[in-house]
Image (cartoon, rainbow, N blue to C red; front, side, top):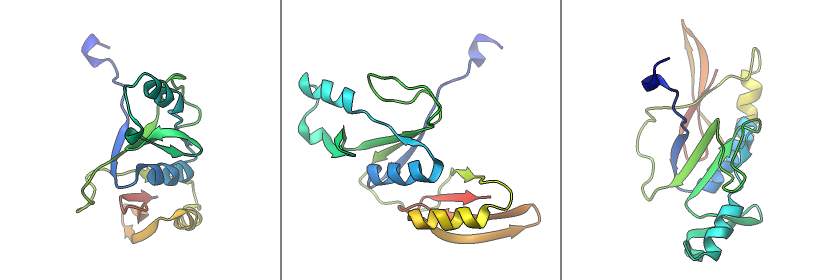
Length: 154
């Protein structure tokens, strides 16, 4: 592998009206953990680098007002910041509402014969069925998360 082809660390970022509610939904949907950034938040508050206007309380601890993230429970993370170093989704607050179809989405694969049970479980968490697709290439259910970001259950 050449030097220019070195793998790049990345995270998926999703715009949100309520990043903390989105993080809670997706943590439950994927079996991920909501990241705990409280150590970093408290440190930056004590140093005066951020103000109380930049934070709120989530899960009984200080958190960023406009950002929340989830990470795979088996992936490493930075203890000082709480940020995951592997599979991770960040939700960032934006002022505008979602207006169109996603150009990128997650496909969830619960396993053979588990699609309908998974769709029901996700509906219980606040997702909605957008449509059911049956094509020669396969079947899946297009769903919307609580802010109507589309994802599929295959």
